Length: 155
Image (cartoon, rainbow, N blue to C red):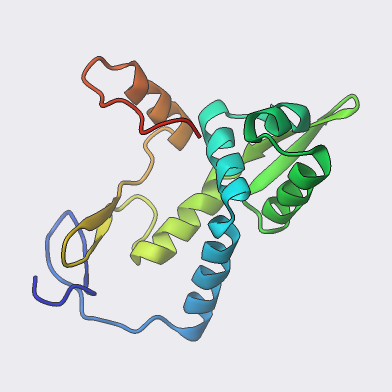
C-alpha cells in the first residue's frame, strides 16, 4: 500500500478511504495516550492485565513506588474508566475494565468490536485482534504454550 496512513481490515484486505479523525475522536485518543504515556500508569495497567487483580500494597511493591504515588495513579486510571476497584475489608483490589480497552482499541483502529484490523505504516504494521474469551485468559494461555516466544522483559 502506498499511503502509509490508510487503515485496512484484515478480513477482506480492502483499503478504506483515508478519513481525518474527527476532533472528538482525536481528542479522546490524545487523552488516552497522555494517560498511558506515564510509565507508572502503564506498568500498573500491564500488571493488572497480567494478574487480573491486585491490591495497592502489591502494586506498590511491584512498581517500586510509594502508596500515595500508586494511589494517585490508580485514581487517574479509575476516573478514566480503565480500572475498577473492589473493597475487601480495609483493602482495595483493582482490576482492568476490559470493555473500556476494547472501545479504545476499536476507536484507534477504526473498527467495530469483534472485527480484526491493522494500521499500516511504512516499515511496520500494528495489528488488533479482538478478544475471544478475554485479554487476560488469552495472554495466560499464550505463555503456557511451548512454541510461544519469551516475554520481552518484566513489567
